[in-house]
Image: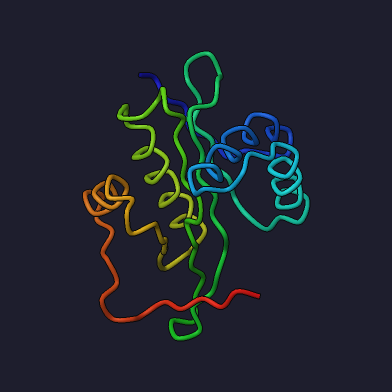
Length: 149
């Protein structure tokens, strides 16, 4: 499968929104295409994330990843959170996810980041295998906590 990877712009919101809605459904959220589009528009308009888009040879979307800039106080440097990664069902097992991850790490490195982080569901073993095969390490030093507000 021929894959083109590029940074999405606000003009791509209608290409990314259906993938983003499907991503949310993967994590048991109800489908809401309007919410998906609004959320992405807000990220683009406020320059709050970077979205990389994978396209097939005809320019049809195959998948995306969304990165959020963070900073490490201890390292006094920029890092990125690879928060979202999704590949359309028909494009899975064709190297799309690996291409997106490589593209994300290339982007972060070029931006001067010293690292990237991600989290995934405990049950998402396929993603865990992919991440580990690409050199990502499971954190055994720190525990992550969340607080619902």
